[in-house]
Image 1 (tube, helix red, strand yellow):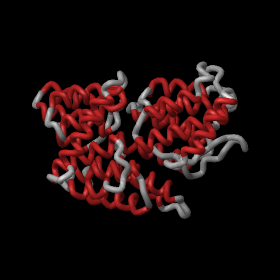
Image 2 (tube, rainbow, N blue to C red; image 1 turned 60 degrees about the vertical axis):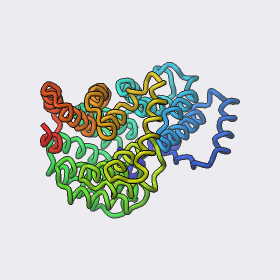
Image 3 (cartoon, rainbow, N blue to C red; image 1 turned 180 degrees about the horizontal axis):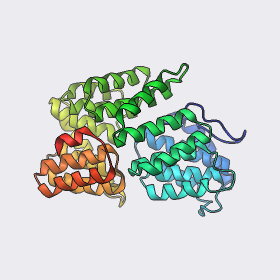
Length: 369
């Protein structure tokens, strides 16, 4: 969930609410900042700035190695109990990015338990997001409510609506998103976040026309890689792979984008399909040289095995490992798709029981199981 705009009110003049991403070609500034940090390794404000730039690059490129550089900038503060608040929040955000969700929750709870830190809206919102990824919806609700008490009412309302939709309170969640979108003067990035959440809600409801319209509204606002990937997944599922290819054409060829290009290309019988699949296969082989690869790339590897290589047994194994780490609707859907493709009744029952245990509402999964 993006949270980079809207009424998050700082508690003081020195609180950082947002750091703008580094431009892709701004390597000179990166070098200058690193030289400054080498001279002043105990400067927490500078270290957080450097780490944020590296995290932005990791997200832009889909490459966790940049997150490793970000962690290196925070190395002078190994003890969460004594780390400055901004450092601890950045560490938690990096842990979230690296799929170390339990560690991220622990860091955020430690930060928010400190005197005077309970008013950090961004920390509460990050905590709500991580708990949602783990399908801990009731705990996420509580963090969402604390976002409101910290001064970010719009973000809190959207946060609660996302959780409500996932639990099946779809009509109420839809009304909430529509009411938030009707507010005058919303920045485009906030509109895009709300519309993407609405599109995903409609997609889970199998309301294809409504989902399609919401995704198109997001992308009409301007470039949005997350929305482009989500819309491509929707288009592929709808049997419209050529449109998925067109949607992804302007995007940087990150692993997530390349995976969808390989899937859509194979289904559209595009001339680029074989080369895209080969490149993705090479990237997976390279990633698997790192021990954390299946934790960080389990979803993508399972999708590649299932939808490109037609290897449902391997996809099922990867999907099982993936849902141990993250349990967003796409992860549970992928487990169900792999189980169905494998023809294993026990695996199908496993997916059904997991969905029920999480309390997840998703009509796409219901249709499979």
